Amino acid sequence: MDLNYDELTFVEAKLMQEEFRKQLKFDIPNSKVINSIAATDISYNPNSTTMYGTIVILSYPELRLKAYSLVTCETNFPYKAGYLGFREVPTLIKAWEQIENKPDVVVLDGQGYLHPRRMGIASHFGLLTAQATIGCAKSSLYGFYEEPSIIKYSFSKVFEHHTNEHIGYALRTKNKTKPVYISPGYGLSLVKSLEIMKKCIGNHRIPEPTRLAHEIVNDFRMGKLQAGYKEVNPTPVLF
Image (cartoon, rainbow, N blue to C red):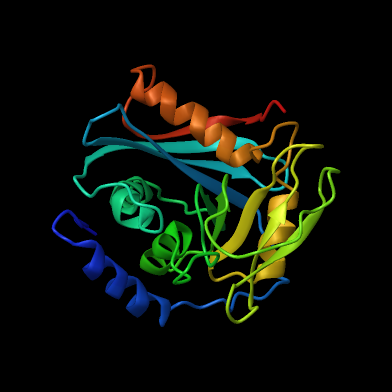
């Protein structure tokens, strides 16, 4: 799949999101067993059009690193809140295509259904790949919620401003720290997405699959790792 959104305007991108939204599905049974989980991340140098992307694959729920895919890709689509998929998904699709044994779930560093048009990067990627995805964002983009308890693993529902629709969760991943924002991207229910992400919490604010993806992609950008797909002997994530 050769994606290039460089010529799109934000108006055209918004219309595309609205059409994509009609195709979203959240129909994977909550009872489906998850044995592997992946996470994505993108890194780039300031003022550069080169995107360094990774998808890391871990066993679940043990969270042992099994493999990673590393790619570079050029993009001129600018960053704008609410349109991250158009900037980063082409790189992630390229990384995805290198993976022979696909993971059961992919966690993306951004929003899923918790988005003004329900089409955050996790929904965008999930729709194009027909893959179960979860958005795990470090900051709130949309909606309102009551602050969860300051205790680790506490959470509260996030609601849409106008309709009060339940669209995600604010999840506390560490005592007395800012929550992360969880929502399904594609395939999974709200409840299943939260259940999965609670089992990915370690000793840091950022859940372990996403934290590991961040470390690996930065090593790649700095030249410590080479592009391509690599399987590794399963090693535990060090919390």
